[in-house]
Amino acid sequence: MNSNAVRWPNSLWAAVTPPGPDCPELTGAQQADVVIIGGGFTGLSTALHLREANVDVAIVEAAEPGWGASGRNNGQVIPTLSRPDPEDIIARHGAAGERFVAMLRDSASMLFDVVKRYSIEAEQEQAGWVQPVHSPGRIKIAERRVQQWSKFGAPVELLSRDQTRDMLGSDSWYGGFWNRTGGHVNPLALARGLARTVLGLGARIYARSPATSFERRGDRWVVKTEQGEISGRALVVATNAYSGEFTKSLVPEIATEVMPVLSWQMATQPLSDNVRKTIIPGRQAMSDTHGELYFARYDARNRLVTGGAVLGPGDKTGRLKARVTERLQLIWPQIGDVSFDYVWNGYVGMTADFLPRMHRLGPNAYGWTGCNGRAVALTIPLGRELARAVQGVPESELALPFTEPVQYMAHGLLRKLAPWMLVLYRRRDAQELVKGDRFELLRWAEYLLASRRSP
Image (cartoon, rainbow, N blue to C red; front, side, top):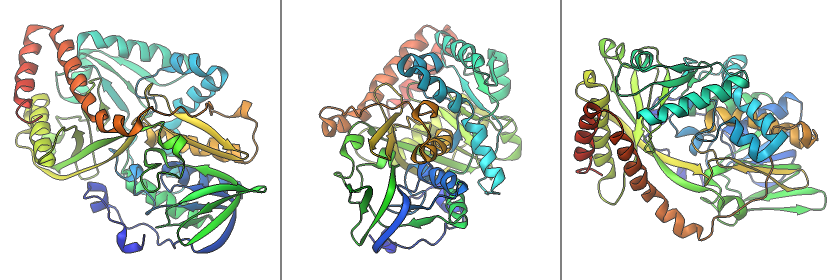
């Protein structure tokens, strides 16, 4: 791969973010104390924390820093997992789970602290994260999460239906909860800002250099690319959902235990000030409890950044625009005509139980996968913990609940079938709405019937 081969998606973030640093390709034989494969949030955060400890570190990146999921996501900074709550995590992982929960609780605040400490311009807004509930029965989710996270000192609050309506500018939800430490960023600006920061601290980043293999030679790890190799005392594999996208044989035990699911993001034209003040007036990040997730936040130019899902062949972009337009107009009638300037996609690494996977890959070698849509906040403190691990901090002190890789059987077939889970999610969402009042049912039935014309 050469520099001309790195093509960025037609995303809002690629359009508005200043270029990243100029990084060389890996050629010849190089050495470092720690080698990191992957220049996304995890790899960059790990390098940052290693350089703060004066450890020599080099990143080997297949494309450019932030090219993968780190630069393509919605940019919501969410200090929870998508489904498991603290008691679920602790039941699975015990004391390591408790340490992980504490890390997760502080994850959003840590991200915003890093951005502030290094003066990274990432369009950051720590306005909080809201999870409204879309059916009467799902208010139990909000109640459970507030109850559990409160035990661990998280600044969470249960919202009534009226409070949710006032906060979001819509009566489409039945209540919810919010965490004051959350918010949103321009994720590509964050990735490029982290890259500039770690380079300034003395790290090295080799770009456009897909790792083809790694192996243990004596007491060192050797990472190979097409044009060179680099060895290190320790190794961190930080490729997440893109673990099998450049070289399927690089780390198959990780690549086949996570399901890369295509996530579509969209950005409207900037909303007028009058309309913007009536739709999420406090500028919080929002993602609700639908199986087919409804989510939105503003960027720095008052574009509403949202997204959706689409199935089948044909004009996916056109059908997605039509579907999400109907959704936005149903939730926020005051939005009026909707026009999308940007539509793009990228992979999210999903696991069957929605828990991330942390692994020991050998002596002084670690990897992880399974962001499940929560990587922006999670990866910053996760990088700190991986940096501590390669420096020899005892496992009993790490917030890393290690497990053995468990691969999906028939991974290739399941990957083709995974997007069709959306049909099941839509069916469940519709069934839950039947339990609501008749007025709500009529409103959403109208939307669901319309959506059948653009599935």
